[in-house]
Length: 394
Image (tube, rainbow, N blue to C red; front, side, top):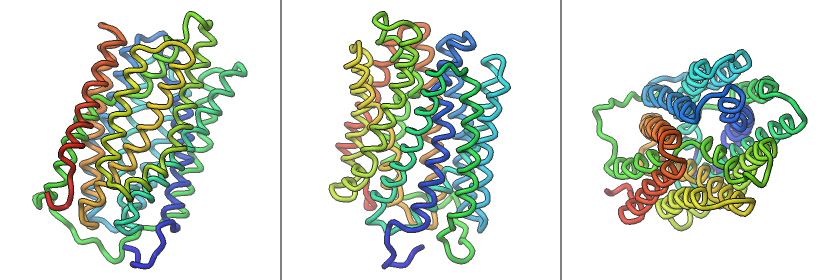
């Protein structure tokens, strides 16, 4: 743990943030076009998008709980995180050899297992590098850099697609920031723990406030389906005014715009969470996703596309930053890896269920049914969190 006089914007916060900026540029460049590659490039149905997203998230969830718990017991957790970053880059790199959509399941799963391996460790290292009163700012700053990378990646993807390059060219180019992120995390960051970690058994219960938080986290996760579906919806709400090619370009533009919104709001939201309370800010972010679903349900044209990008873009980095900072404030430092393992695995399992459910509803009922499903569950999670906020005493 850092000394009591240490500033919150230190080497680890900067190092982890810059590494994740490159990491997000890597996989968001891929994800900006992946649902279009699956459906328009390979001719797969919409439920394939949900299946691929869901299995990827599920495989990640299976790794996160073990990774978080194990990282609290070992002195070399940073090296394990570096391996996770590398596995993500390698898995997404396999997309250059894809010839049919079922093969994407393997590549996506391997990539997200790597993400599951490193994510609890990275979050625990970040939380352990600042004081409790600075957690919102630290995670908000991290999410701002993270989302800036998610802005750079789709920008490059949009440029490549707009200038006539194919999807696999995007996958090749994405390998460059992927290699950079592995090198940056390995060279810049340091494990903030001192000495050999003291093992903590899973049989020791987590604080009650932590479990009170996990309830709305799980409900929100069940409704918080993948952004890939909003990308598909963006194509639909821009037709027939635009040609098919124009609508596809607008969908990639939507992905860019929603990440731009996220980059702009991340740090202010983290700062606000430190000032007014993390639970109210998180509840507002949950409700924002519900509003994004409503706009996707009833909107049409450029205005709807812009408002949908505003709501969808705002919620993701705020949810990620404030869930993490709130978790860190509820749990003792020596159990942060385990806590983030639980948080990320619950999110991953819920993402598996939400993406598959949304894909089935989207394909076999209607896109409207999937959007209503997301809006109802996310609004419910917001209300529960607002009415029963967790703290260290409950």
